[in-house]
Figure 1 (cartoon, helix red, strand yellow):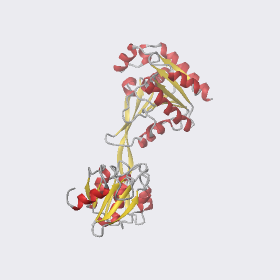
Figure 2: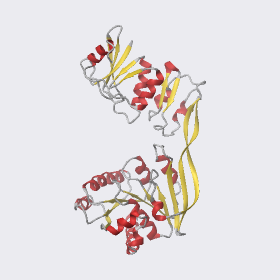
Figure 3: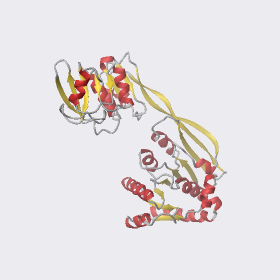
Figure 4: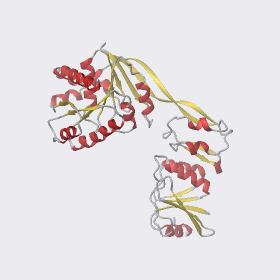
Length: 106
Length: 281
C-alpha cells in the first residue's frame, strides 16, 4: 500500500509538515517494500488552489492514505471523491508516523 | 473624467468623501458604487432606483460521457479550479476559485466542457434627487470574487460625465479593478499608524498603475503628523484635510452627508475638484 506523508525534508528523519497544500516534500512510502520516494512540492509557492493540485497529483501517484497536519476543505473534497483516506493532526518525525500507521495507531 | 475614491485602510471616510463630492458637483456627475461587497453610498444619496439588471458569468460544466479524463483543463487552469481524478473517472470544479476565463472549455479536445450562466449579482441604477445618475453593484451573497461585477459596473462610465467611483478598502484585486483606468485616485486616510501603513500600500498601488493620486486626510486633528510628513516626502498632494467633529460622525451614523450638515463644504469640494482637474491636465 502506498501512503503519503507531508514532510519538512526529503527523508524519513524529517518532521511531518503541518501543511498539505504548501508542504516542502511529499514522502510517498510503499508499506510492502518499505521503500519511499521524496517528491518536492512544486506547488508550495503557488497563488491558490495548491491543495487541489496536490490532492489531484496524489490520485495519479496511487496513494491510498494521506498523513499530514492540517488539510483544507478543497483538498479534502478531492481526496474524498478519489477515495483516499486522510489522517490529520499528525506531528513528529515521518518515520514515527509511518511506524504508528503500520501499527494501526493513527 | 473618472475619479476613484479609495483608501487602503477601511473606515477612513471614502464614502463620506465620495458622496459629498458628488453632491457638491451635482451637474454632469455619475456616482458608481464599486464597493460591491457592501455598497453603502445609497444610504447617503438616497437614490430613486429605477432599474435593476442581473449580471451573469459563465461557469464550466462537464459532459462526463464525452470526457476522456486527459487532465488538460486541470493542467492549464491557472487558478487551480479543476481536479480531474482519472482513476475514478471524476471531474471536480471549484467555482469559488474559477475566474470564468473560459480556458478549460476552449482547450478541451473532446468538447466535453460547456458553460452555464451563473448569477453574480445585480447592478441597480437610479437618480439622486433629480441631480445626477446613481449606479451600484451588489454582489450576490456567497459569491467570493467581486471583480467581474465591478468590471460590469464600470462599463456604465460615461466619457462626458464626472464619474465618481467609490472603491472598497484595501489594495487587493477589487480595488485594483475599481482604480484601473481612472484619471485620478483620491486616497482618503486618517493620521494614525494604521492609516499611514495602508496609505503607503495604496500609494504604491496607484504608482504601479500609473494613476495620479492625491490624499484627503480625514479626522485631521487627531493622531500624529506622520501622514502629512509622508505625503510631503513622497510629493503626494494633500487635497484636503477634514477635522474630526462629533457632529459629522453623528450625522454620518444617521445617513446624513457631510455637505448637508456643513454646507460650506460644497465650495470646499468644488475647489478640491478644480484642483484635481488642474493636476491631470
